[in-house]
Length: 234
Image (tube, rainbow, N blue to C red; front, side, top):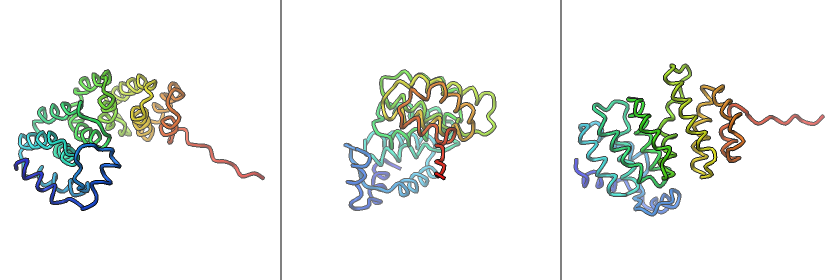
């Protein structure tokens, strides 16, 4: 499949009048076609089935380079698969996209693809840790979004617990960062962790919660320190 074929398939799914609303909602200055997410899912699922790993990586890179909103989402979805073997090229491509992140939708789709590759090879977390020192906010944020799978185990292995502690250390380093998206990412990580490891989440919040922005603290505490119900007056 060529890039032209893929773009033609995306354009065939355009919903008239959708592009303007999507561009405004996602705050996009790049071209937005107006293709619904389910249609992109269906297309990329078919492409994954039809293409080799090398072909998928090449098409993903070509789609990303167009800088079209839906094409970048499709590029990420092409690589969002648990089993890709070999996957070094896919991981390298996803990591190469980091400097281009400039909106949550594109960043999160790319990070979802990256999550699969990180779970497949957790040693890549050493590379991710370097992202936490970046001057680029979206790269720093990606370090938390891409490691979200480690919040979800009910019975973590020792090495999974070690990752939790490591990422919570990154969160600690971020708490003074007032950027809304960074604060939101900390809250997201701690909130999701609290569903499966409330003791760790509670300890983090007791130590650092007061330094978070109020909205982030409220979200992070949602499941470990739920708001007290008001008792009716007698």
